[in-house]
Image (cartoon, rainbow, N blue to C red; front, side, top):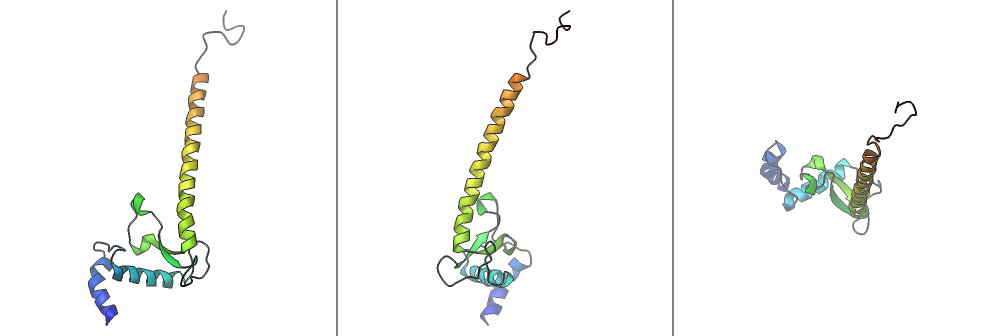
Length: 130
């Protein structure tokens, strides 16, 4: 009977209404069960089986982070072990910082290249000045 109550309460969400959030304990439990079933009880990244506790405990991962506009819908959620979930955030930050550093280096290189490409008033070949 509990499952029917959940479905009655969340049918508008499933049929395209406003998405529920993971703050709702019933939706969070539903999402955890669905993700576990969908991924066969394995982590999205390392593909190890989940355990009840510890580093391989199941956590809910947003594929597109909420900070970047990701939603709590099942299409944007995945199950990851605690270890992978924690390290993915660090990797994303490191990757972001590396890309920003590379962009700064490229910007400096293009600025230096632009200065070198300015035409010199002096002739470059001996016949040019004649």
